[in-house]
Length: 161
Image (cartoon, rainbow, N blue to C red; front, side, top):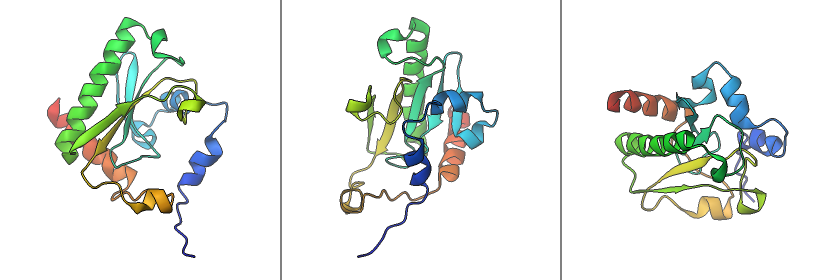
């Protein structure tokens, strides 16, 4: 049997169920590049997913640690949607995906990896981007590092204003 090594996943596996929220921890950090935060707004932020389904997988979260979208203020809701649009435009300009998956997993039973801090996902998709690796090898193949993806998205974001 061949083995496919994905040592970077261990950090995620060990962090599941821990008390400290990853979004709240990211917000307290001062190094946005190290935390993969592309942009901070007044109420929310746009961040590259450290454990992506595809290259460019983004997340949008409010600053406040809330469980449900019904708990968002109008200002938070408006800014989340504005970041959704900005993320989509940035990904389109940077990588020209064929489509996007956009959504939220609310609660452990829905597949949420971060329970208790509402957030949205924007996953760029390309025709043929799914292959046997995730199904048989339980491994995703990403063509570039997170840091390379971050730098590309940051440059594109600055260009689109």
